[in-house]
Amino acid sequence: MDLKLLFFCLFLAALLIPAELKRKHGKNRYRHRDPEQKGTGRRKPGRESFKNIIEDFFFELTDGGDDEDDDDDDVSEWLFKLQDPDGQCNPNPCENNGVCEEKGKRRFKCDCPAPFKGRRCQRGPKVCKRGRCGRGECVLTSTPPFFECKCKHPFTPPHCRTYTLCEPNPCRNGGQCIVDGNEFDCSCPPGFRGRFCHVGPDDCFVDEGESYRGNVSETDDGNECLYWNSHFILEKGTDPFNSFEDPDGLGPHNFCRNPDGDLMPWCFFRRGRKLLWDFCDVDMCPEPTGEAPTGALPTAVQPQPPEIEPTEIPEPITAKPTQTIEVAATAGASILPQQFSTCGEAQPKKSVTRIFGGLKVSPGAIPWQVSLQVRHKGSTQPFRHICGGTLIESCWVLTAAHCIDKNKDMQVVMGGLSMDLDEPTMQTLQVEEAIAHENYRETSASVHNDIGLLRLKGIDGVCANETQFVKTACLPDVQLPDGIECTISGWGATETSDFGSSHLLEANVLLINQEKCSEPKIYGAALDSGMFCAGHLQGGVDSCQGDSGGPLTCKQDISRVIYGVVSWGDQCGRKNKPGVYTRVTHYLDWIRSKIQAPSS
Image 1 (tube, rainbow, N blue to C red):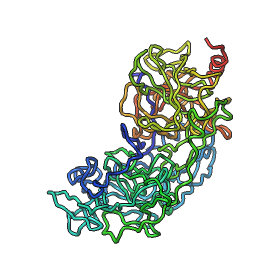
Image 2 (cartoon, rainbow, N blue to C red; image 1 turned 135 degrees about the vertical axis):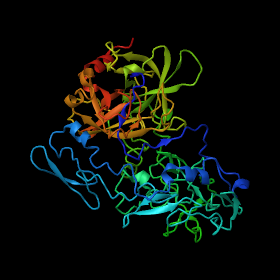
Image 3 (cartoon, rainbow, N blue to C red; image 1 turned 30 degrees about the horizontal axis):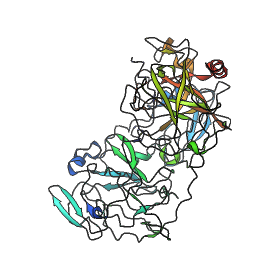
Image 4 (cartoon, helix red, strand yellow; image 1 turned 120 degrees about the vertical axis):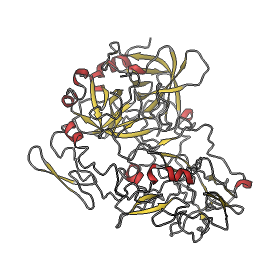
C-alpha cells in the first residue's frame, strides 16, 4: 500500500461521480466575441460527433432491460450495519423523506413516499435504464412514465434509434444545414451562433450571470450541456418526482445557468462515466451606455430543446442586473486586519445542495478550506498544490504531518474554489513555520500521529483576514457519536496524482463505529486511538476525491468543527475499506501547546 497516496474514499452514487472542472489555463470570463465570428455554427473540438454518439457506452442500442444498477436493493445494507448506530432510527436510515419507525431494539421500518420503495426508500422506479432511450439522454419527469428521451441529433424522436441529417432542417433562424458524411453543420445568418444557430445576437449575461436566461447550451470547449433533470445528475442528488422548476432558472432544459453565485453561467456535462461541469460559451454583456443591457431571456414559455423542431427564439427582454455581493470590500488586502469574530459559521452565496447533492461547492460554503502548495527551496518555479488544510486561526492551518516537507517553500491559498483561475476572493500567505507531530511515523499498515500545523507569515499576529470567503473552523471539544453525517472537501489533486479536480468538491461521509472498523476484515489492529474511520462506500462503487491533510468537519451545535484530518486508506473503492482520519480531539492539547508557544 502506498501510504504517500493517502487518498480517502467515499460512496456517492452508482452513476453520479463528483463534478469536476476541467483544467484550464488563461480563461478570460470578460471576453467579448468577435462580431465576425458570431455567424458560425461549426463544430468545436468538444462537440459530439456521429461516431462518438454511436460508440458511447450510454447510447448503445439495447432492449432497455439491462441496467447494472438494478440489483442494488440491498447492496448498501452492509454500510448501515458497519456503522452500528445507536438506535435504528438515529440517524434516520430512510432516504427520500421516508419516515422511520422503530420495531423493537434492532429493527426498523421505513414508511416510503410514492413512488420510492425498498427497505430504506432508496429506490425510485428504474425508468432510465441503459439503452431505454437509444441514442438519447434519459431525463426524469414528475409524471408517468417518469422519463422522457432527448435524442442526440441527428437521431430522431421518440426512440432515438433512427437518424436524419438535414431533413427537416435542424438549423434555426434561417440557418443553412450542410451535410458532411454522417455529420452536419449549420451555417448561421449574421448575428446567430451555436450548433443550431439558436443563440441570438443579444444573448449575454450581466454581473455573474445569476439573472441569465438565455439559450447557450454548450461549455466553453463545445461540450453539450446535460439537461438539468437528466437522470445522470439527479439519480442521487434530489427527488426528481417533485415538480422540477426553480426560481434560479433551472428546469427541464439544458441551457446554461448560474444558480449558485459562481463567476458566470455554467452547466454539467458527461464524459464517459464522469459527471463534470464547466463555464459556458456565453458572452458578458457590453458595459451599459445609459440603458440596462439586454439578454436573450425566455418568456413564460420554456425555450424548445435543440432536437425539437423550433418555433421561434424568444424575444429578448430587458435583463435586470443581479444584486452584486460586495466582494472587494471584504476580501484581500482591501480590508483592515482583525482577528476572526466567529468560527465554524459559513456564509455561502447560495445553497444548491437540493439539486447537486452537495458535490459542487458554492462560493463561501467551505471558507476554512485551504490549498497547501509547495515549490523547490529558493526557486522561482510556480507553486503546485499537494494537500489540503483547515484554517483554525488567523495565522494557523491544521493539516496532516505527511504533507509537510521542510525542504520546500510552502504557501497556502484560501478563499477560492478553483486551482486554475485567479479569483478576487483569494488570499495567499507564506508558511513561516511547519510543525509535524514529534511522534509521526509510518508503518507498512498505517500512519500514526498524522497531524501537523502551519504557522503563516503575518503582521502583529494577523495573517488571514476574515471575509465571507475566508473563515476559521472551530476545534471540537467532545467526541461525536457514531453514524452522524460529516463533510469532507478538497481538490483531489496530490503530489502523486494528476487526476484530481481543479475545482473544490465536497461530499458527505458517516462516522463509523471504531470497534467495527477494527474488525479483521476491515483494518484490524492498524487503527489506534488517534484515528477513526468515516465513509459511505457501496460495493466498490465509490469516488476517490479530496486531499490528504484536508478537513472532515461535523456540525456541533450551530457551528462546524474540524473533527478529522484526511490521513490514509487502503487503496480506493474497496468494500469495507473506508477512509481513515486523524482524530482531532485526541490532539487538542498538542495543538494548543504549539499555537500558544512563543514564536521561534
